[in-house]
Length: 170
Image (cartoon, rainbow, N blue to C red):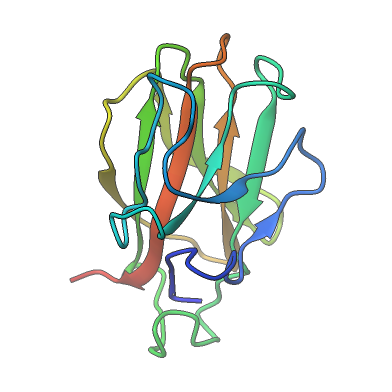
């Protein structure tokens, strides 16, 4: 649970059944010119895997795809085999948002009582490379992390994720 590089599957991450479409597991480059990525972040080659949302058919503008983590609890050992304390827990991930029609990427922290908190939101073209993001997580109750990708207004704007890690702050 502590690290997912998507090389074999979605690890313990689950697709949301109440969204418009799903994140897709992929290798290599995306075939639409002017979008990306060319390769995954982990292996940085054509055989490596990542997840992405595409903005071309059959997706429509402003449709959303969500994927969420298992529940994180201070009473379980979900973080690389060590006891997690919310004040120390962080999520580290890589994202790729390239294309003239990029929608948005939003990361939520959702508590067991269904309270949502936006941790990160980014819209538009961020460049044709993988970018690293690290977020501190702090909550008084069990929670899950949700990655939401939203399609932009055109077909050239895919969003990709790779190497999601939960770890203690160093």
